[in-house]
Image (cartoon, rainbow, N blue to C red; front, side, top):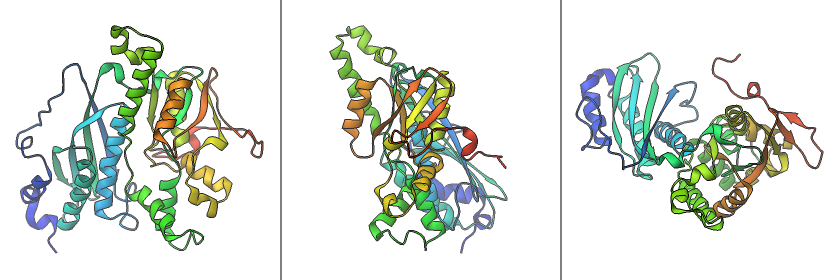
Length: 349
């Protein structure tokens, strides 16, 4: 088996070049052309062996897919469409070259769905396998989605179910669990963990709905071109959990929220496996579902949920105080104040 140290940096780069766009790589930096009146959006994400992925639960192909998907999801959360990614690798010399190529294969499989090239990167020696991706996207300035744009009265929309990725990880770590699930249900949950889908598909639907709202209120052409200032949309992705996303948006917008427990979308497989308490824990704090959490007025929010279909839902509303409250209208669960300390935090105890 060929190892990284056997072929060295230049030999490895020569192999990895075939995964990159030949028209862009080859110089000291990549040049990406954006369209007129577009803003460049840049995001960086790091993944470390033993923290973000493990050979016990993730093949190199799946690790590559998840790494690419995480960065594309960050672009989607800003309302941006991808232009390309740059990949930084820290690798032990004893690591198999085949493992590295498989990692890139997984990244490529994800990126190809969104016509996104690998435009360069760097390789260094490291005692721990580390993957750092910088993704570049573009968005019209009037269509940027920011965490700080939520206003009192906004509906809180989720674009899909939550908890599936956490459940898939549980099945991978403990194959004996989920005995009441059929093979199709298990596969769907495991795929949600290993091959998450960034919700770039939501953006054109959202834009169409907001444009239709302009016709209802009869905005002028100038106002339509700056529509997002008329109908602001706040949001982020739920990579760190649904609760984290809502809390982060509320903090940035200086508002509070009420989440309706019964409206939170869960995988149907949970009905045959988890207790209500476990299902709620997975949905709120499991993370890595890569859905979008968006705050916008009730009418376009309802239209968006209708267009997206199964899994999408209005799960709450923005309130004037600073508390983020989980409420059960059936009163089977007491009201619960949500905080960041309940979810995963790097460097936490």
